[in-house]
Amino acid sequence: VQLQASGGGLVQPGGSLRLSCAASGTIFSINRMGWYRQAPGKQRELVALIFADSVTNYADSMKGRFAISRDNAKSTVSLQMNSLKPEDTAVYYCFADVKPSHDSNFLDYWGQGTKVTVSS
Image (cartoon, rainbow, N blue to C red; front, top):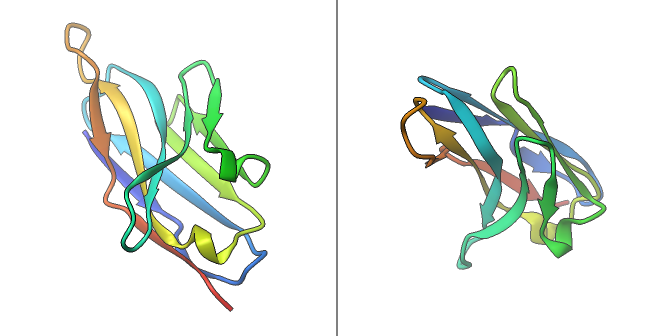
């Protein structure tokens, strides 16, 4: 199973970016999908996650600004980020809890990270 993230870049404060992540490979089912981020010198932190039934969970600082969505048919998860702030600057990592086969356990898989820089 591979996760490929895209959509990072440089944006001015107050701007928007949309991150996408696609899971590929041998996939029987996916439970949670989501995003973490890691800023320079800081620990990785949860941004948002979404369950297979579309229930979502956000870190407090992202509520109202970020929106997570997923396409179960395409095994993709997206993160719409609005009203971006300099403190949102980080490398964003997507993840997915994937069951590769009907008789396997769910395993965590991570994307390679995509850099988001919010600066004027």
